Length: 231
Image (cartoon, rainbow, N blue to C red; front, side, top):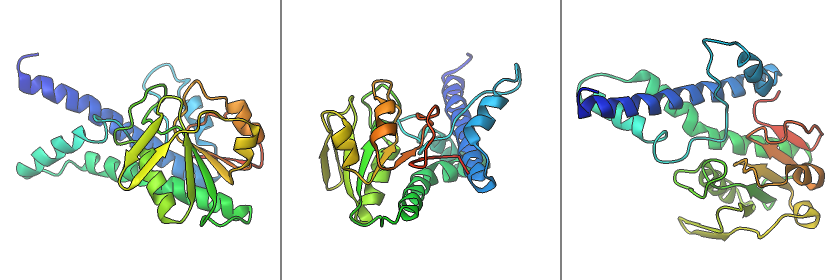
């Protein structure tokens, strides 16, 4: 490109493009929950169009250093030039609200099964900000853990890529493995990061309740499973 300023704007456009489209996918998931429609089926069907549609999927929130942060650099700069970057602001509001929405789903699903959120034992599956890596920067899992702790839940986590996490006043070590006895000992398991190395068949079969934020259990149905984006 013609200048370093242009090159930097290229990066910001790419990051902002993803942030906005993920925000749209997240809002679609929330709308589908209210409409009684499966958002994952809707998105997969839309993705069969051979042109004009790029598939983005919903999730528990944004993580990493680029997408959740860099668009705000652009927004801040534009404010100094007396311009409001409205798409960035709106996408940010939706994406940053997702951890709270996931916690609300957990509370609602526990209530349906006569379990209070306070003192419930909850297993977080995956704390990295995306699958098959060990990076927890800005991970929505950390926000979800904090919100659940504030509500009085007892938290453990399992992540084959992240042996321990330290944030705020909390220090956690990952469970070494998952088996039937471990899974059945939790009131609910919450899939935050859909690592490929995790045995989802085992989770679906042996967990009391599962809240799936990534559609990792797309081939499983049961009264013990609640997916983000399903009515």
